[in-house]
Length: 148
Ligand code: SF4
Ligand SMILES: [Zn+2]
Image (cartoon, rainbow, N blue to C red; front, top):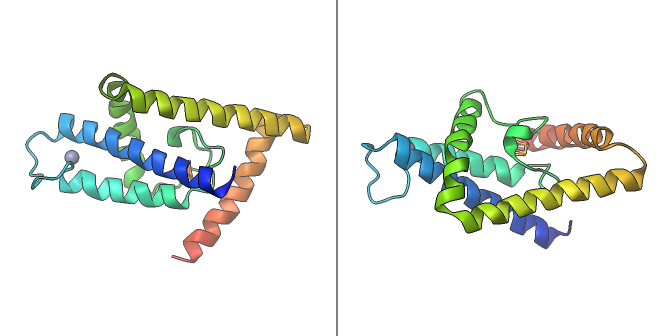
C-alpha cells in the first residue's frame, strides 16, 4: 500500500472512530456537558487517545477492526472502552451513517483480500502471514513507544 493510500486509510479510521464515539456518547452520556462540542470530556479524552493509537498503528495496511487485532495496543484503561464503544456504535452506525459504514466495510474487505493475496504470493497461509506481521508490528510498537 503506498503512503498516500495508507494516510487516507488512517484518516478514514479516525473519522469512523469519531462517528462511533459520537453515537456512543449521545446514547450513554445524555446529561453530560458538551459545551457545544460533539463529545463529552470523557469521550473526547477517549477519542484523542484512540486517534493517537491509529496514528501509530503498525498494522494500518492490513488491519481490519481493532477488536480483531492480535497485538491490541490500547492500555488497560481504554481497552474495555474501545470494545464498549465499538459494540454500541458499530450496529447503530450502520443505521445512522450507512455510507460511512459501507465505505469502512469495503476497505476492511479489501484489506482482507490483500492479506490473502500476499500470503499466496509468499507461499504461506494467512495465519502464518498474520504471525509474521504481528512480530514486525510488535517490534515497531516497541520502537514507537521508546520514542514517546
Ligand atoms: S495496533 Fe491493533 S489495536 Fe492498536 S490501533 Fe492498530 S489495529 Fe488497533
Ligand atoms: Zn460521552
